[in-house]
Image (cartoon, rainbow, N blue to C red; front, side, top):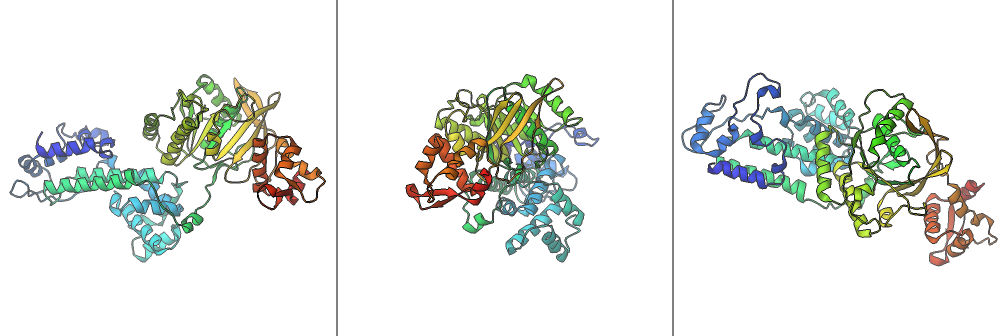
Length: 545
């Protein structure tokens, strides 16, 4: 191995980005039939490595390549620049996702501008569109289809960008802006690889190697080492609340927990949610869903999964594949290497990133960990959060309750970390109730009553009475906590201590309900601290009537 080739090979092996690219230069020698052509490529070292490997061999190789000329001298090579045409390096899907996300989300524009340049895109049309989007954003104008088409038309670049029909296609092909970081990284990685495969231009081999080093350093700095982003209060205020994946239940990009005792149907419910999202079917007789891909990690009970899916499809009159992906083994969420492997394999297996990943159950994905340890529960939450960050998806953890069946099992650190906490309990023969324990963003509602109905060789969940989102309905248990405010004799109201004693609830339960009452506007409060007095609001009286 000569010096230039050794240099690039060493650079590739030790670099965290280039070293993990799916198609490294030495993997590109293959039969052209695999690329859709009829001719065969030579099965010897790729020309790019031969160009870098040494002067005499480089000149000799270049002289034999059509469209390229060489001059005398060991390192002076005048090379006609040509784009790399290997279809594996075009990455149209990631370029489309980046541009589409920029058109529908202001934050995505900022993220893309921070890590990409027009030259990062392989398509000329995409370079034109990206430049226009950056111009519009820099002016402070809204970035959307109207402003983009006007900007391109005024500059005479609309046709070069593919025309108005293509711009509309970009928006239609991008249902959500989640995953923008991952798609931007893919675009940058492929741009770096194209740079390497294109070989030296008029510059010498040494100059070319230096350019490659700089390109990879820029990529590493932009993607791997930038960790914290500082926002102004105006930027925070401009942020839009993420939409719901299932109306009123689980938000896009959130962390949720569903817990319930064995046999109550929590896995059936999680599967029901996943299939409804995958197929865009309203859940529970009317709650709207955001359609997208779902990954279901079924770490226990995989043997009964087939009959459950078949029964669900038959009940909903669905024929053929749904598109939902299953993993039938645990993903150790406390193990960063296992999480990395899961993310790598998911990206390799799916054309589009999921909007929801279900882990059923938390216990099986925490093997060897202590659920009662705040530290170890924090590690599990960090594993789930990493998956949410990198994929831009929501994560649902299916979990067990404590011995009393009232709250989730294990450390309170889990409840503190999640956005949504729901419980599923049996309330009679074949009847179950879904209740909200916590909803960080948005009004809690419920409960939702369902029936476990035998169907074919399995069971399906059927709705008893769909709940209307935003009605502010309270479960009977929660209303019991509110009731003492309507029966007390003091017109000034009750202190929190007096109220808690009157409703005979545990302190943790009482204060959880109190937070909900204040957030939902069910009570009025006069004063502060321990001296504060609570009375029923108009909404509170209405809910108890």
